[in-house]
Amino acid sequence: MRLFRQLVGVFTVLGLLLAVTLLFTYDIIKLEWISFMEIQPAHRQMENPLPVPARSIPIEGPIAIPGMGAPENPIEADEASIARGAELFEIHCRMCHGATAEGNGPIAPFLANKPANLTSPIVQSKSDGSIFLTITNGVEGKMPPLNENLLVPDRWDLVNFIRTLTVED
Image 1 (spheres, helix red, strand yellow):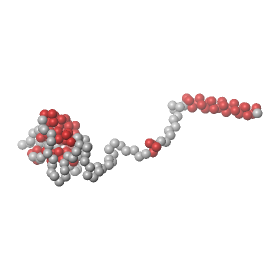
Image 2 (cartoon, one colour):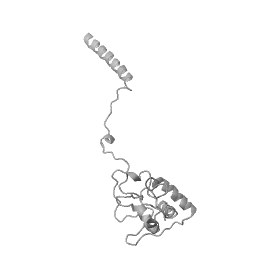
Image 3 (cartoon, rainbow, N blue to C red):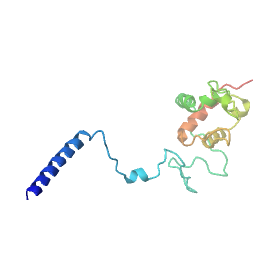
Image 4 (cartoon, rainbow, N blue to C red):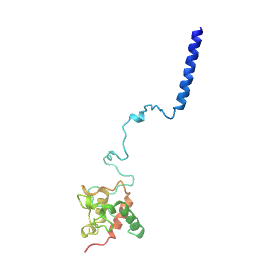
């Protein structure tokens, strides 16, 4: 019986020492438990986005009906629209097309396919709808589509701004 009491006393003291040691090392030694979030595959934002379902219409409505030609510009080219277009140009287009929109932006020398000169007669002779579709869908291997970055009215404002650019002689 005496041996049993001594063993209980020794184990009690050892238990208290272990508890005190664990209290002091709590912030130093942390055991990480595996959770389901840690073993799931992780994806960055917009990494491998799902394709748009066939025959779906954006929430803003259809921008163009396939096979019916370029759409008509529904936004009046007033001062407010042109100012918004200029601001959007600075954010989304200037890096490639340049401050003067002549295709000489800061990253243009590093591109394999040079950006278009938006002041050229070729670009300025296109219809508003054609420029809108180019902004929307991009140009394969040359320009990325901006349909995910810009809403439909923003793209029309950008078209109205491009129309104000001076034409080269």
